[in-house]
Length: 216
Image (cartoon, rainbow, N blue to C red; front, side, top):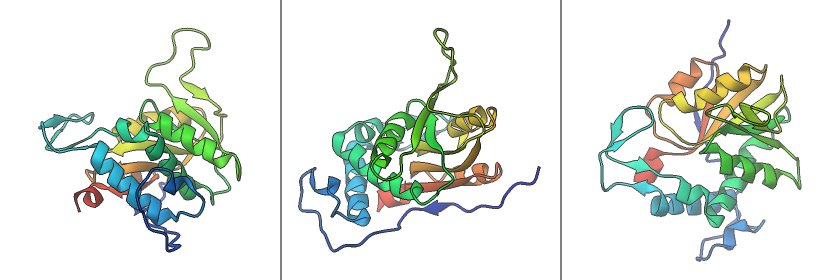
C-alpha cells in the first residue's frame, strides 16, 4: 500500500483582532476574542493546571519516564479550558468539508470531542464518537460508541501525544470499520516521535501546542 507523505504542523493560525486578555473566564468565550488570544489564554491555563514539574520522575503511558507530566484533565474538564479548546480545535477542522465526524480514544479525547461537536452545531454540525479501550460487555457490546458510521471520514483527537501508540488504538479501530483518518489533532505534542510514527501510517499530526511552547 502506498503511504502518503505528510508533515506535522503546529496550529498558530490566528485571527488577530487587537483584543487583549484583561482577566476573567468569560472574555474568551465571546465571538470577538481572536484565536490567538484564546491560544494564549489556553496555554497559560495548561501551565497552571496541567504542567507538572515537581514530584517526578513520572512514568508515561508509552512506558518511558519523564521529569515532567501533563495531567490534562484539570484543563480539559474545566469550563474555561473546554470553551477555549472547543473554539481553537473547531477552527482546525471547520474548513475540511470531507470530515463526517470527530472522535478518539477514551478518556482523553472524550471532552474534546464533545466540546468540538457542540461548538460546530451553529455553523457546520459535526458528529462525535468515542473509541473504547475495551469493548462493552453488555448492551450493544460496541467498541466505537456515539455517532460513527462505517466508511466515513474522520479526524481523531488526543489531549497529549508522546509516541502515538495510544491514538493508534483509535486509528486501528476506525480503519477496521472502513473509515479514513484525515489527521490527528492533539492539544500538546511532547515531541517524542509521534509525528514520525504517525507519518509512517500516512497520517498528519497537528498540535495546538508543543512542549516547547509550554517551556517558554
